[in-house]
Length: 256
Length: 132
Image (cartoon, rainbow over all chains, first blue to last red; front, side):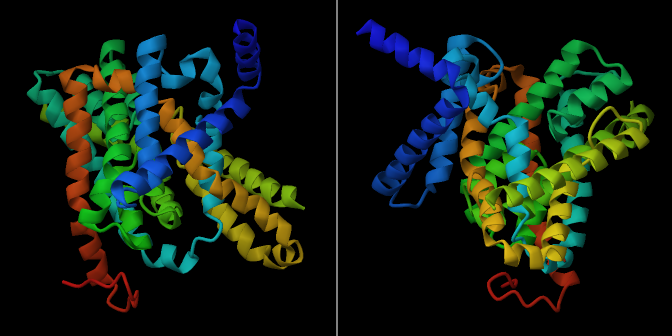
């Protein structure tokens, strides 16, 4: 019996990506069943699958005490490959095919405005949080503010303006919290605030920004709207990296 | 050939990320500025100009469609490889900053969709037209 288990384990580990296909397939199937059986389809199967994924990530994180959730368990390392930024970005790019260029043009302005406003808004909220928790150095305030933009903008800004590694760690954590919250809340929030058109999807992507969070949130809400949300969200981090260590840092310096 | 479609996406992926990297360099940042967004634009352009090619090779479109359909599974795998433990145990500052930024941003979505609607009165989206 142990020989069977060992063989299976060996096969799973040495074919990590295929293991991930199987695991995600099973999780998706079960999620679809839960969605139909217990919520009558009210909560999208993908939303349940993503929540299940986050749950597995938590379990994996506790079990392996690493930083990549389930992927830190050698048996499930392939999940990290399938869900890594390479595959994420490649599949996001592929979703652009079939997006309506006219919709993008028509809502382009609203998308750009929401993007600019979204970065500044998250930065202000993050910076205000830092101040209310007693941070006084402009460098720390800016870095934590940038972390509330995305978990990439945080460390990029922090290292650009010379923040300490402890503050950079806080900024990454703030970005991760945002990303996870967006993933988990979007399917429920989407109905209330009506993210149901290409335009609202673009605004959503521009305001929330975190690529993983918005992509997951939209996927669980309405996959047809993914390209619109992703289009603005993917520019969000870049814009954040651009203005946090420059203009926004300059403003914080003047204020504190 | 299915691979034609996959290769087109891959080409746009690199072209977009290259653009993002170059822009990042020009801006003096050690990061990629919107590479994926540019890649998406390139794919839209490629599909527009390559329409005759795609019509002659319908299976190429299947290659793109397959990866579109793989998006959600990839996202499930992505959520399973997030550092959720850290997010939940990261101390009050990080949790408050992340949560507050998310909630405040959510609140502004309806406001923005209204502003956009007024700017574009010609908009004739049947289901998207503002009801207020």
